[in-house]
Image (tube, rainbow, N blue to C red; front, side, top):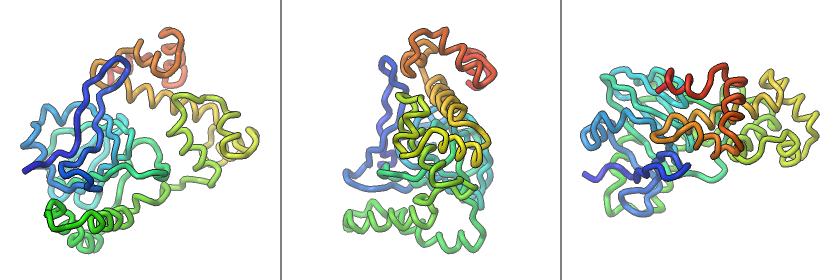
Amino acid sequence: MDLLMVKIGQPSGNDPRRIDYRPAVEGQPFECFRLGDLRHRVGDAELRQLEQLHFDLVIGCISGRGIHEVDFARTEINPNRWLHIRPGQVHRWVPGHYDATLFVLEPRPNSPHWRSGPRIIELSDDDLLDIEPLVALAGHERRTDVGTDALRTLRDLIVRWLSLDQPDPDGAGSDLYCEFRALLDKDVIDQRAVSYYAAQIGCSPRTLSRACQRDAGRSPKQLIDEAVVLAAQRLLGLPDTTIAQTAEALGFLEPTNFTKFFKRVSGSSPSEWKEHNL
């Protein structure tokens, strides 16, 4: 069975190891298969490596309990506690005794902002009964007699049913703050000035500052710095990416400047962070 719809690229220069969306059947908008089948195909050693996804992945636990790591935060998953990983996040499979249905969805334009780290989908027993036919139908998406339009409709049902198209339900804050966080996701590698984000949103830096203080308890500059550190961690955690390469990729002229910045914001140096987390 042809399961895995991605290509795995090895680092080149400053590029981190990444997994891109590429369906086994060209043009398919999603794929659905079992974690057990993926383990059998690629092996546990491959799954334990840190990877950066460039598509949406939903891990729907169907038996047992497990732990999964997203953006270096670990969280429990079980049949009532599913996990959504969004494009750009770094994740790692943690060995455990559980199986899951995996939904892999092509990247969607203008996806809503979700906070960094794992996003949990809480499901009641009734919810699980309701979604069971959808999961069963999704598992047959490789049938050659199912057209692309029908598959896109099924993909859209999955997205809506699991609320993947909705903003953060855990108190995302005002529209202005959410727009700022979404811009951070997209632009923080190249843009670190508060004035840039305020101009993109169409407000003054002072108005943006008030929104951030009200909704997050921190200034826009603090949130920008935290986003840069997360971007650095995502790079540092991937194979063959050095501190010097990470500094260059993030626009620091000297690795020493990057190290000072990283330690000031996170409380540890890049090398200390790598030793503790990898």
